[in-house]
Image: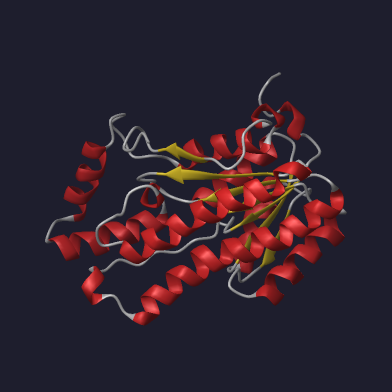
Length: 259
């Protein structure tokens, strides 16, 4: 079976889909014939990204920290598409600081979006999938979910939680045929990374160019990761080709971390 051929006609929700990794996921799924609902805090950007994919796709606003917002957005998708088969819980944020300098606001912001957002979107989607009798969830975790990242202790905590949740939810839903996996990207060239590079350069007393060179040095494949590197894996996990995979946190890091 050619990977992704079964995706044609499926319907997906991608949170944080307007830019970066999320936009690449949306484009890749659309290339495989999936109708995509791009859900993003920036509704205008979500609509613009959807328009770029074609008339079969929609963009809508969502705040993954709020249950009412998630419920409303997912109901809008159901109304537009007649349901949905795939959830890619990709919305995420980061800030950077030394652990001893972290503020309550930084901790709460990262945990609210990265962890609570996955909880809410997964739970609401899982209820829909249980009713429908089918469904696939792919969560975006991180290399920082496998190994604690200096200057990103709070972010690492939020992403470690995503992996624990993914494993537990996968076990609970397996008997109903619903698969739940996570992807763990490394040093990805995105707008988020640009912000992180500037923060890290200041905190470490380096230039942004030196920070990027350090990322590449740590990556055995010798380059920064591109959003499309993750998107291809997400499409695979959403397809029947991954039909016997659930509860996994799959590294796509260029070899930075191999466990």
